[in-house]
Length: 354
Image 1 (spheres, rainbow, N blue to C red):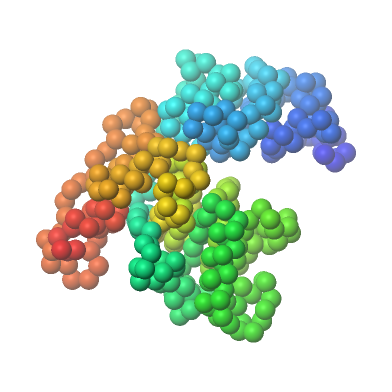
Image 2: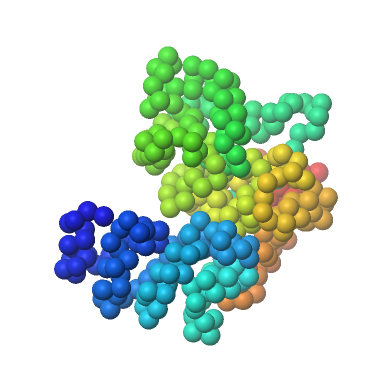
């Protein structure tokens, strides 16, 4: 913390401080003493991305450091606390309240339906050995073809992967397939001219910042292949595809990630490709694994309803049932009935698909 920043706090010259709990309470920083000295001047303690405080019933599994969060609340015990997030299932909410030492009877929950009806949910089964396309699924080949043909006009996409080696492998495939078309200006070879980038923790901070800046500002960058934490706190309204290569850590994270799709309200597609095989997918959520297995086995008739049922809170009221009205099978062009704009499972039951 710079001297000017410390002076501003001490003189009440700062009305809003953005920081992580770790930054506030790190032993090498004077924040801890400042908090204890000036806590009477703090009027609100707010946590954004509150689902990261704890996940799946494990207090230390969230992105926030569990110990720092507890200590911060301990210092600011009498300060009103606000937790904000797009998704927080009931069990996870109980965990968060416990970590923050908040009595459920003394808290108020304001909750809305977390559905994103403009985002089509698509499930694609993993290629089997000997299947056409080999180890490269057709949907990925199709998107690479879009990039080849449309270049900087191709739909923007974020592809989430579980591991760095998967990120580099897929990015390498896309670069090799695109050849000279991987750059805005063929033959440029400048990183700032790439239309496909990767983002992972092995990159330098400077490279990570360059990728984020390009994706949020530069319209030429069309696709980022990234590990799961990418885009938290970043809003790019015109992302059309969210592509998952493998399962997210849990259903909450998955729904948070597809929330990056089509923020501008226009149609978007969230594609889930459970690779590698479900039995070896490194996800901490057995609930997510089982749901995907049920989808594969035909036990789920609507992906949207199945996911929302895991995220629903009592404060949201009764979970709405999507109208089953469908087309008459005489569509002249792309069908936009309730089934065809919901998910790939619903779409497959529409008469126009028979």
